[in-house]
Amino acid sequence: MKRNRLVYILLALFLGGLGIHNFYAVYTKKAIIQLLCVIPGAVLVIPAIIEFIWVLVDICTVTKDADGKAFE
Image (cartoon, rainbow, N blue to C red):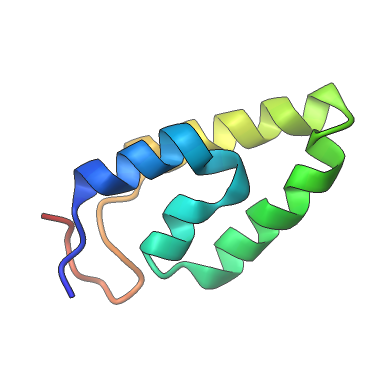
């Protein structure tokens, strides 16, 4: 299944802290780790900042899904 890069970016921007964009790109382990990081990030500022930076890096660097297929 071809995945759309715009959808990936929008999911990252709006639901990035939950790792939804990584579930979309089938990076399941990475998505679960991000989902688990939300718990301390909801209470503490530093994990939330780290999660925000992580999402920005994902937006800029991820160009393929977990199957190695390039986004449309």
